[in-house]
Amino acid sequence: MHTLRDLQQDFLATVFSEEQNALAQHLVGPESERAWRADIYRNNTFSNLRGTLESTYPVIVKLVGVEFFRHTAQQYILQYPSVSGDLHLFGVAFGAFLASFPPVEQLPYLPDVARLEWACHKAYFAADHTPLALGRLMQVPPARYVDLQFKLNPACTLFESAFPVDRIWQINQDHYTGEQSVDLSSGSAIALVTRTMYRVSVSTIVRSEWCALQALSSGLTFATAGDVALRIDPEFDLISALHRWVNDTILVDFSLAT
Amino acid sequence: MIAKKTPDHTATPIPPCAGIGLRAPHYLDILSAPPAIGWFEAHSENYFAEGGLPLYYLEQIRSRYPLSLHGVGLSLGSTDPLNTEHLRKLKSLIDRFEPGLVSEHLSWGSVSGRYFNDLLPLPYTEEALAHVASRIMQVQDFLGRQILVENVSSYLQFKQSTIPEWAFLAEISTRSGCGILLDVNNIYVSAVNHQFDSLEYLRAMPAEAVQEIHLAGFDSSGECLIDTHGKAVCDDVWALYAQALALVGNVPTLIEWDTDIPALSVLLEEAGKADSLLQRSDDHAHFA
Image (cartoon, rainbow over all chains, first blue to last red; front, side):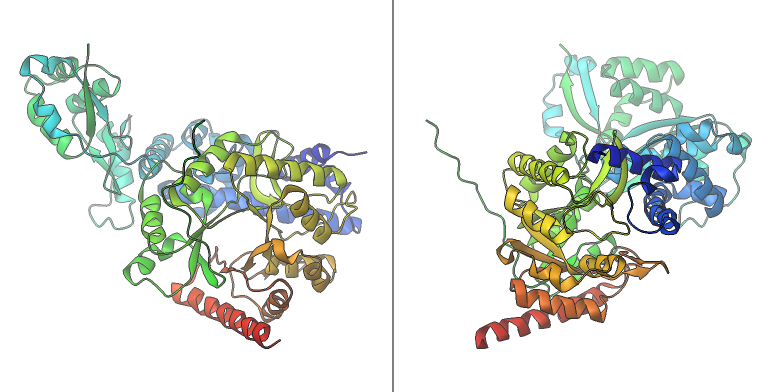
């Protein structure tokens, strides 16, 4: 006697590992029909998950072409199961997967493009946050500035890559009209993914600023973040950077280290 | 003893007229010129994020229209434990948007922790009946409210099944106290695929439990009909809908269109057809 759980596990085996008989033994109707009945469910599942990856990774689709993307997505779906009924969470490991997917070995920047697209996806759905309360910040006595700790906007990701993937990402945006070529030897990308109101953006920033924000995001004090930036660029203007970060809602809250 | 807290405001009930499934391509059209439509239905999981633009749009639309929430990912019929993270997100969405109705599917979509993200059919057995009824009760307890459960289209039948789908659905409602979301298109699709009589299905529905109807379009794979939600409602389904209204009375009716999404005006036209059938059914009731 098969239980409901046996049947569900047999369904799983048939859809994801093509063990046709696992499901076929449970089905009504002639043997000849059982394969295509299972195929309908396999196609629905794969096309749904593939469509989710296509809409999360439009730049990768452009870079490798629709046909090749489908083949790649198929392999990803088999290796990285969906673990939620919420499809927005599917595709989190696509960058890591591409890094170990032999057919794209010749495109070493591809995994990082995927990681950047995932950062944009996360930014789009990140929690909303009110701007930093400037009035409250002004009340902090200057002697305590060194102890300030800041909270980054939940939509922010500090992104870096050995390849100019920020540039690759920009020129593959739908409304981009500028220079089309990318010099792959032009070096690394240091970028900030953020969301202003509801618009996600990827901006290239200087290393000193990137490192200062990284320090702040890991809970280090304003004084330490300043030291980090000044060690990279002795001219770094921490106060005007702070103004800009608050204005651009990159920093959204603060507290004083005790 | 602490007195029970009265809610600050209550959900807007879904009126017994036509509504439209809310899809992202229509957000701006709806807000720039709010159409004359009774209500909207949103897929719950599309708004599970912590923030961002979709939730902003849903807030705006909710402030103008009654809203129902329709889940596609809870996997009610799975033999895995209920996904409490999913339920928690659903509950906070319900608390925030105060929907008039909350619905899920009579199906499963995950096992051993792996999700198909699809609505898979159940075998209609005593074991499945007891399992699903108890899961629905757990969900209703967790959410603190009744849910509606919708019949799905299917492309296969299980040897184990001992109960007709219509009797299974009716009994699920009786045992768990859930309402029924009757998808007339799904009845039609499954009736053609499995050669049963759709009228027999409709007649088996406990009228008082049916609180919503879904209408959509389907495609054909050559071998069988596939529920794609990518076309207009077909004539046979409109005819079946009219029969459903005669049997269960006028209930909120949703036009679903989820793939190859056309202009909002096309959906409004479909909703208009549903409204005129609801009107006719109302007139019949008055003159009967």
